[in-house]
Length: 48
Image 1 (tube, one colour):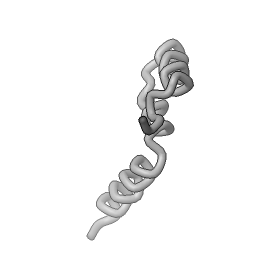
Image 2: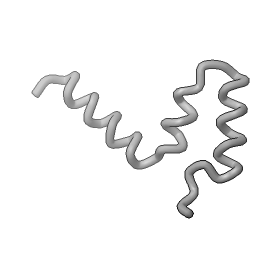
Image 3: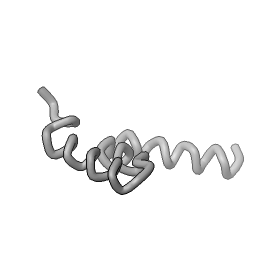
Image 4: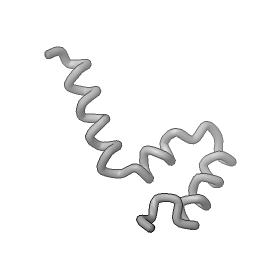
């Protein structure tokens, strides 16, 4: 097991715990980030 595998596992675990943060971190611009914030505020990740 190398350091890359360990890092990859740690990042994957964090993304599973907080899908909203992972979604925001994928934003490619300020406009994209703002749109993603609005989607989350409207309930994109809420359980139905």
